[in-house]
Length: 192
Image (cartoon, rainbow, N blue to C red; front, side, top):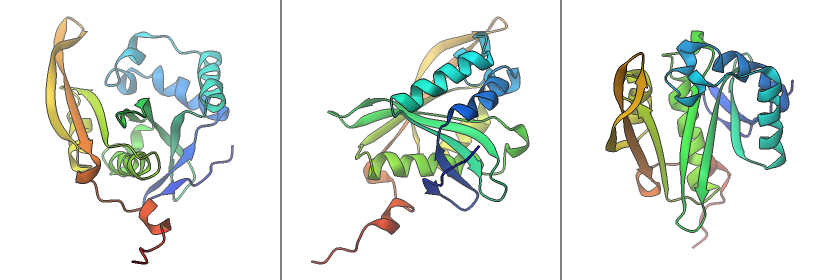
């Protein structure tokens, strides 16, 4: 399956999603180690057919959903997206998963988030990007914090898993707090 280097970092690049990515999505969303930290994916059965249907709808609707691809091997390792985009107030929600567990804890998620935020602020002209992560997902919270997100609140006892209750931690980042690294390379210098 071809991947296209839309935004390129040092470890990974973002490629527009493809229906061929669906097999990976189904694998990840049926792996509880991957799915429980995401949320709804843990208790929603995901068949290959359903994953293909979702991927096809993303392609058809030109959704801002990207595969996260290892730069060295061209291996699809995750997915990220900007969704619930409000073009009037210029904000969106961000979601990200590194589905291939051997890539966890190596900085791929942080770089993918920075690439996606760069895309959101500098190509979609957003002003604010928000996300939520469950309090037990310490790895994700560290990743988002290192990418520049700040905690803005909590939704108490928002997830119940195995009889235990967990808060959802809400985070955001503003355009003025982010330093572009990728998109700015393609913008002509100011001639004033």
